[in-house]
Image (cartoon, rainbow, N blue to C red; front, side, top):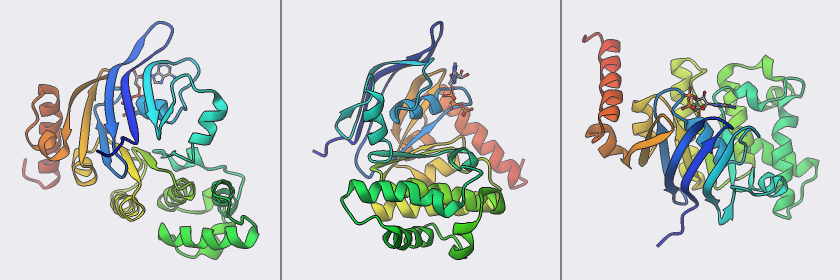
Length: 270
Ligand SMILES: Nc1ncnc2c1ncn2[C@@H]1O[C@H](COP(=O)(O)OP(=O)(O)OP(=O)(O)O)[C@@H](O)[C@H]1O
């Protein structure tokens, strides 16, 4: 049996006066694509922040999160620092969150890249970093690398910024990539391109994916298993093909019906 890459056991998250996520358990196998869906405020982002050890100090976790054999809940900051980038990297909804507005994009991609090369004991001088950076820029299909590495975040399009954020996440060679609504801030055509890019990259590189989205159609295309959250709890989980076509829970049914109505409206059928 394959050992889980991520095992979340009875995870609860709360502030001093409020429970936000309740008793959540799920696993992700190496290379598996797993989806988290649910309405706004259902606890998807907090769950992903807990997995990557990035919870704000006001939110306390209980339960267990074992990522790549290491316990995250209660782990010291230094251990979490080395897990981030090594075992897990995140692509956020808004690429500007991940980018420094005052630093050229090439320098930003070079930072996690150099860190990883050092971690792997490989040469990490300027020439090696530049060579790996060119490969990464190709991998995320960014045009005009010469211009791109010198550009600042505001000088490229939103879709290109998200490709840079993906390149930075991949520069770490994580075992788990978390993509938290990675296309919400983009136009429809760009959304489609980024989804295709993410799918092909995680497949090519054998990286596990935790994909968070409101968009059930996209989730259905992207992931093998899915968990549906509401009010901080899991209401249903299983194979995406089953949950999204024959949901057992009435809340999931409501989400699926709403998605169908939306698709029908777009096609001018309702
Ligand atoms: N730093 C915080 N302090 C207190 N409450 C928080 C904090 N961050 C999030 N919350 C609350 O926790 C709940 C879950 O939030 P979360 O961002 O995980 O939802 P979500 O499902 O990701 O929503 P969305 O799809 O809108 O991103 C919400 O009620 C939110 O208001």
